[in-house]
Amino acid sequence: AVTLVWFRDDLRVSDNPALAAAAESGDDVVACYVLDEDTEGIRPLGGASRWWLHHSLAALTASLAELGVPLVLRRGPAGEVLPRLVDECSARAVVWNRRYGLVERTTDATLKAAFADDGLEVTSFQANLMFEPWEVTSGSGEAYKVFTPFWRACLSFRPPRRPLSAPDRLHGPAPASDDLGAWGLLPTSPDWAEGLRRTWTPGEAGAHARLDDFLDGAASGYKDNRDRPGVQGTSMLSPHLRFGEISPFEVWHAAQDHQDSSTAEDIRVFGSELGWREFSWQLLYFNPELATVNYRPEFNAFAWESSTRSELEAWQRGRTGYPLVDAGMRQMWEIGWMHNRVRMATASFLIKNLLIDWRVGEKWFWDCLVDADAASNAASWQWVAGSGADASPYFRIFNPVLQSRKFDPEGRYLVRFVPELADADNIHEPWKGTAPGYPDPVVDLKESRQRALSAYKALSEG
Ligand code: FAD
Image 1: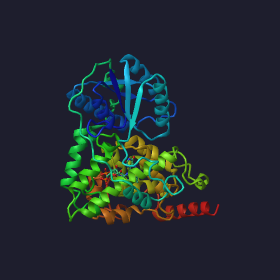
Image 2: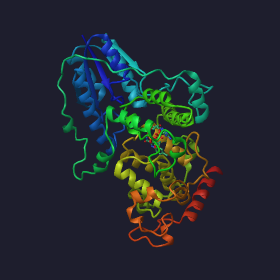
Image 3: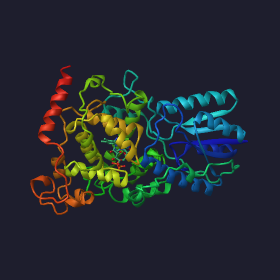
Image 4: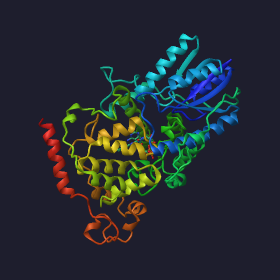
C-alpha cells in the first residue's frame, strides 16, 4: 500500500506531521511537489521566490533521498495533477499540511472530497502556524483587529506543541518526475541572483544553521538591535519560514529553550514577532483578498496620484535621493530581503511621499523578496497605508532622514548599499553638501508630507 505525501509550503523533513504520519503508517511512501501556476486565481510566485523554490526543492530532494525516497516533481493544476499521481501509484492514503489562502484551501477541500469519494483516506495536519486561524478568534468569532489582544489570547490558549523529529527511514517506489532544471525557476539572462547566492542557503539545513547563528549571536540584544539595519540584529529566518523549511514550532521552542535571565526579554519580543506572522495569516484567512482589497473600505475612495511613472521607477531602483529609502530598495534588489524598519520606511515613502497606491508597492515586494508571503506582505503594506487592521494612524509618515539618523547614525547600512554615499559630506541629507553620482531628491519631504496629510484628511472627511 502507498501513502502519498503532498509537500507544499512545508519543504522540510523534521517537524513535518504529514510526513511523520506517512512514515508511521508503515506504507510505501511517495513524496511529491506540484508546481501549480494554473489553478484559477492562484498567485504566481515572484522572481526571487522562484529562485528560492528551485534551491529549496533541490535541498528537499536530497534529504528525502537520504531517507530512502525520491521527491516526485509534477507541474500543472493541482486538482488534475494530484488525482493522476494517486492513480499512477495506486495510493491508499493522501496526507498534507494545511495551507490558508482561499484558492489553496478550496483546491484542498475539493481534492479531499473527491479522494474520500474514491475511498481514499485523506488527512491534513497543522504544521505551518502555531495557532490555526480559526482557533483563537475575537469575541464575535472573527479575526482579531488588533495584534496585542490577539497574541495575548494565543499565548493563553495553548502552549505550542513540541516539534516532531524527522522519520528514520522511508521506502517506496519512484514514479516519473519532472526535471527541476527544466522548470526554469532560475534567472538566466540576465542572471541577477549573484547577491542571493552569496547571502542565502535555501533548504532545511540552511534554515537550522540560521537559527543556531541567531541564538548564539543576535538573539541576545534582539529587542534593541532589531531596529538597527546596520548590524546583524535579526534572525533572517523569514524566507525559511515562508517556504516551511523550518516550522514556527521549531523556532519557538529553540528560542524558549535557549533563553536565560539576561535574554528573557529579547526572546519574548522575538516570540511576538513570530506572533505577527500568525496575526497576518489570521487576517488573510478571514480576508482572502488582503493583497488587493482595502481592509478599511473607506480607503476605496482614496485619491492616489496617477502620473508618477518616473517617481515609481526611482523608488524601485533606489534612486529617490533619500539614502535610507535607496539603501533599502537596493538591498532588496541585491539580496532579495530588506530589513523590517527599512521596509516600513520605503513603503511609507511610496505611499505617502509619492502618493502611489500601496498595491503597486505590494506587487513590487512580491516580485523582489525571497520571503514574499501572501499574508505578511499584504498585511504589512495595508498597515503602512493605514487601510489595514491595527493600522498605523494616517499622520504617521516615516521621515527617512530622521529614521536613518536614529537607527543608522553612522550610515553603515547606507554606505553598504549606496556606495556612492561613502564620500558624501552629509550622509543623511546628501543634498545639503556634495555627493558625486548620487541623485537629487525626487520630491520635497515637507511638501509631499503636506500633500499626503491633505489627501488623508479629505478621505476622513468623506
Ligand atoms: P525577525 O525579526 O528575526 O523575526 C522572526 C520572524 O518573525 C520572521 O522571520 C518573520 O517570519 C516573523 N516576523 C517578524 N516581523 C514580522 C512582521 N512585522 N509581520 C509578520 N511576520 C513577522 N515578512 C515576511 O515574512 N514576508 C513578507 O513578504 C513581508 N513583507 C513586508 C512588507 C512590509 C511593507 C513590511 C513593513 C514588512 C513585511 N514583512 C514581511 C515583515 C518583516 O519585515 C519581515 O518578516 C522581517 O523583516 C523578516 O526578517 P527576519 O526574519 O530577520 O525577522
